[in-house]
Figure 1 (cartoon, rainbow, N blue to C red):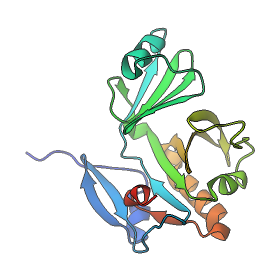
Figure 2 (cartoon, rainbow, N blue to C red):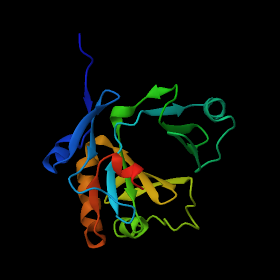
Figure 3 (tube, rainbow, N blue to C red):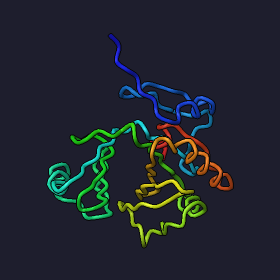
Length: 195
């Protein structure tokens, strides 16, 4: 008996773009594109294969504290290895990476917008104030990009953007269009390690 293979909402788009697709943790993932990413490039990476969990309810603080060693302040991100805990409200947190909670991976599409012009690209498509003084590194907020409710996470040198999976292809195309003047190009998950 073979294990089922999962695919994210952008798999066909990656195939059309010539990406090398490999199996990672049971998911078909765009690992690299024909044009390799370098440290000076602006790239968009599909992270929809990341395990995603949601913590809801009155015990959210205790659950977050057990994962992170302490509760996480509202609108902040606790980042540890390959796990990022976004604290959204007193009763809601989203965990991208390994955790024990309600698995909602298939409901989210996650993208990393990496590069020196990431904030400028996003400023073209959202009215959300993403300046570092209002959204410091390891902070998060929610807001729209072209009508798509987006969870923004700011990290050093990149933004992680999380949307519902049925909007993923539209969202990808909006970002690629906005980033065209900055040389934005798609990259596989190896694009993250190149940064």
